[in-house]
Length: 191
Image 1: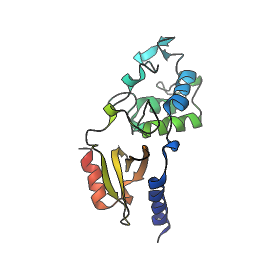
Image 2 (image 1 turned 180 degrees about the vertical axis):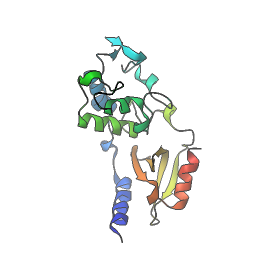
Image 3 (image 1 turned 45 degrees about the vertical axis):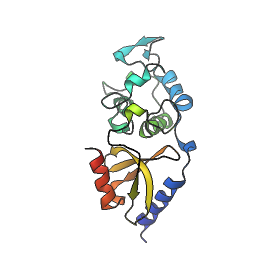
């Protein structure tokens, strides 16, 4: 067994045993970042620049396909991407290097989006944000023939996002580590 095959087998096993405790929680982990780093310019209690309010009651308007936060796709989410731009970029947030998100905060923000950008608990995407192709748990098989049941959450580059129903946790797995049938299943789900 090659090193990469063994590594993938271990990851597949971990996917089966991971608990929801590892999911990022909006209320305790993400909302405080927004309050501390974004509310000065993006809150109805202070001011709303760029028509972007991040208050708990306004945030759902920013989440979904074609919006500022795209569940399961951090690198396509304008809010996340703008927070990672160089200080001299005109679109960087926060602007002018003021109150930038730390590496740990960026990691949490990215994980929250990747897990589905849930406002009610870690790991579960809002019902309106689920891809149309997602319709419950499907069987996914890796290149070694090991199978798990998970919900398709989307594609991110050359990886598939799969959510384990029992835990609500979303995992990113390289398409190349899935069987040809599972790869085709993932690609067909986005059409």
